[in-house]
Image 1 (cartoon, rainbow, N blue to C red):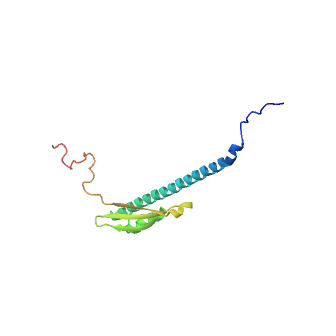
Image 2 (cartoon, rainbow, N blue to C red; image 1 turned 120 degrees about the horizontal axis):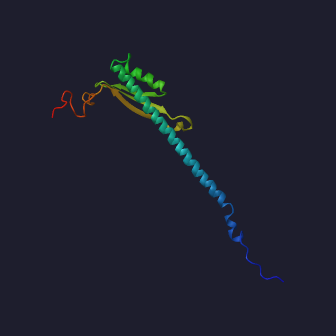
Image 3 (tube, rainbow, N blue to C red; image 1 turned 45 degrees about the vertical axis):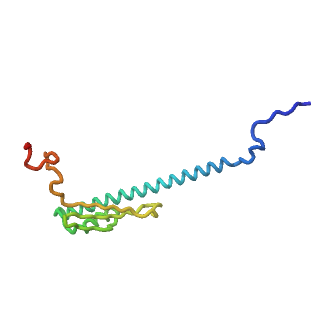
Length: 151
Protein backbone atom coordinates (compact mmCIF):
# COMPACT_ATOMS: atom_id res chain seq x y z
CA UNK A 1 0.00 0.00 0.00
CA UNK A 2 1.17 3.39 -0.80
CA UNK A 3 1.37 6.37 1.47
CA UNK A 4 -0.39 9.68 1.03
CA UNK A 5 0.19 11.42 -2.24
CA UNK A 6 2.30 14.54 -2.12
CA UNK A 7 0.64 17.80 -3.13
CA UNK A 8 1.23 18.59 -6.78
CA UNK A 9 2.77 21.82 -7.85
CA UNK A 10 1.44 23.49 -10.93
CA UNK A 11 -2.01 24.04 -12.22
CA UNK A 12 -4.76 23.16 -9.89
CA UNK A 13 -8.31 24.15 -9.24
CA UNK A 14 -7.30 27.26 -7.32
CA UNK A 15 -6.17 29.07 -10.53
CA UNK A 16 -8.88 27.88 -12.88
CA UNK A 17 -10.54 31.35 -13.00
CA UNK A 18 -7.35 33.02 -14.32
CA UNK A 19 -7.28 31.17 -17.62
CA UNK A 20 -6.96 33.63 -20.55
CA UNK A 21 -6.31 36.74 -18.44
CA UNK A 22 -2.82 37.13 -19.95
CA UNK A 23 -4.34 37.30 -23.44
CA UNK A 24 -6.73 40.05 -22.39
CA UNK A 25 -3.87 41.96 -20.75
CA UNK A 26 -1.69 41.75 -23.88
CA UNK A 27 -4.59 42.89 -26.08
CA UNK A 28 -5.17 45.87 -23.78
CA UNK A 29 -1.49 46.87 -23.86
CA UNK A 30 -1.45 46.56 -27.67
CA UNK A 31 -4.56 48.75 -27.96
CA UNK A 32 -2.99 51.44 -25.76
CA UNK A 33 0.29 51.29 -27.75
CA UNK A 34 -1.58 51.59 -31.07
CA UNK A 35 -3.54 54.58 -29.77
CA UNK A 36 -0.32 56.31 -28.69
CA UNK A 37 1.33 55.64 -32.06
CA UNK A 38 -1.67 57.09 -33.92
CA UNK A 39 -1.69 60.15 -31.65
CA UNK A 40 2.01 60.78 -32.29
CA UNK A 41 1.54 60.37 -36.05
CA UNK A 42 -1.37 62.82 -36.00
CA UNK A 43 0.66 65.31 -34.00
CA UNK A 44 3.54 64.94 -36.47
CA UNK A 45 1.21 65.59 -39.41
CA UNK A 46 -0.17 68.71 -37.74
CA UNK A 47 3.30 70.05 -36.91
CA UNK A 48 4.45 69.42 -40.48
CA UNK A 49 1.46 71.34 -41.83
CA UNK A 50 2.22 74.21 -39.44
CA UNK A 51 5.83 74.38 -40.62
CA UNK A 52 4.72 74.34 -44.26
CA UNK A 53 2.26 77.18 -43.57
CA UNK A 54 4.93 79.24 -41.81
CA UNK A 55 7.42 78.77 -44.64
CA UNK A 56 4.85 79.62 -47.30
CA UNK A 57 3.71 82.75 -45.44
CA UNK A 58 7.32 83.91 -44.94
CA UNK A 59 8.19 83.45 -48.61
CA UNK A 60 4.99 85.10 -49.79
CA UNK A 61 5.47 88.12 -47.52
CA UNK A 62 9.05 88.52 -48.76
CA UNK A 63 7.86 88.30 -52.38
CA UNK A 64 5.23 90.98 -51.73
CA UNK A 65 7.82 93.18 -50.02
CA UNK A 66 10.10 92.84 -53.05
CA UNK A 67 7.33 94.34 -55.18
CA UNK A 68 6.83 97.20 -52.70
CA UNK A 69 10.55 97.95 -52.70
CA UNK A 70 10.69 97.94 -56.50
CA UNK A 71 12.80 94.80 -56.77
CA UNK A 72 10.09 92.87 -58.65
CA UNK A 73 7.25 93.89 -60.96
CA UNK A 74 3.58 93.43 -60.26
CA UNK A 75 1.16 93.82 -57.40
CA UNK A 76 2.33 92.76 -53.89
CA UNK A 77 -0.65 90.55 -53.03
CA UNK A 78 -0.84 88.89 -56.44
CA UNK A 79 2.88 88.10 -56.24
CA UNK A 80 2.35 86.70 -52.74
CA UNK A 81 -0.58 84.58 -53.92
CA UNK A 82 1.57 83.11 -56.68
CA UNK A 83 4.26 82.14 -54.19
CA UNK A 84 1.66 80.60 -51.88
CA UNK A 85 0.21 78.55 -54.73
CA UNK A 86 3.69 77.32 -55.70
CA UNK A 87 4.27 76.28 -52.08
CA UNK A 88 0.99 74.34 -51.93
CA UNK A 89 -0.72 76.82 -49.62
CA UNK A 90 -3.74 79.04 -50.01
CA UNK A 91 -4.02 82.71 -49.11
CA UNK A 92 -6.29 83.57 -46.22
CA UNK A 93 -5.46 87.28 -46.31
CA UNK A 94 -2.97 89.72 -47.72
CA UNK A 95 -2.68 93.33 -46.65
CA UNK A 96 -0.32 96.13 -47.61
CA UNK A 97 0.38 98.38 -44.63
CA UNK A 98 0.86 102.13 -44.70
CA UNK A 99 4.32 101.57 -43.22
CA UNK A 100 5.50 99.75 -46.35
CA UNK A 101 4.94 96.21 -45.13
CA UNK A 102 3.05 93.26 -46.56
CA UNK A 103 1.26 90.91 -44.16
CA UNK A 104 0.27 87.50 -45.50
CA UNK A 105 -1.73 84.75 -43.80
CA UNK A 106 -1.38 81.30 -45.34
CA UNK A 107 -3.40 78.13 -44.86
CA UNK A 108 -2.09 74.58 -45.38
CA UNK A 109 -4.22 71.49 -44.89
CA UNK A 110 -3.01 68.43 -43.04
CA UNK A 111 -2.30 65.68 -45.56
CA UNK A 112 -3.17 62.01 -45.58
CA UNK A 113 -5.32 60.13 -43.11
CA UNK A 114 -5.17 63.00 -40.63
CA UNK A 115 -6.86 65.56 -42.90
CA UNK A 116 -9.77 65.65 -40.46
CA UNK A 117 -7.50 67.55 -38.05
CA UNK A 118 -8.08 70.65 -40.14
CA UNK A 119 -5.64 73.16 -41.53
CA UNK A 120 -2.69 75.06 -40.16
CA UNK A 121 -2.47 78.84 -40.48
CA UNK A 122 0.49 81.14 -40.23
CA UNK A 123 1.00 84.88 -40.65
CA UNK A 124 4.16 86.65 -41.74
CA UNK A 125 5.03 90.29 -42.35
CA UNK A 126 7.86 91.73 -44.41
CA UNK A 127 8.75 95.10 -45.82
CA UNK A 128 10.90 98.16 -45.55
CA UNK A 129 13.31 97.97 -42.62
CA UNK A 130 12.78 100.36 -39.75
CA UNK A 131 15.48 103.05 -39.82
CA UNK A 132 17.99 102.61 -37.03
CA UNK A 133 16.80 99.09 -36.27
CA UNK A 134 20.06 97.48 -37.35
CA UNK A 135 23.57 98.88 -37.00
CA UNK A 136 25.48 99.57 -40.18
CA UNK A 137 28.45 97.41 -41.09
CA UNK A 138 31.29 98.03 -38.65
CA UNK A 139 29.13 99.78 -36.04
CA UNK A 140 28.59 98.48 -32.56
CA UNK A 141 24.97 97.98 -31.48
CA UNK A 142 23.56 101.23 -30.08
CA UNK A 143 26.23 103.33 -31.80
CA UNK A 144 24.92 105.95 -34.19
CA UNK A 145 26.51 106.50 -37.59
CA UNK A 146 29.34 109.00 -37.56
CA UNK A 147 30.02 108.77 -33.83
CA UNK A 148 32.81 106.20 -33.91
CA UNK A 149 35.44 106.93 -31.29
CA UNK A 150 33.53 109.74 -29.58
CA UNK A 151 32.68 109.27 -25.90
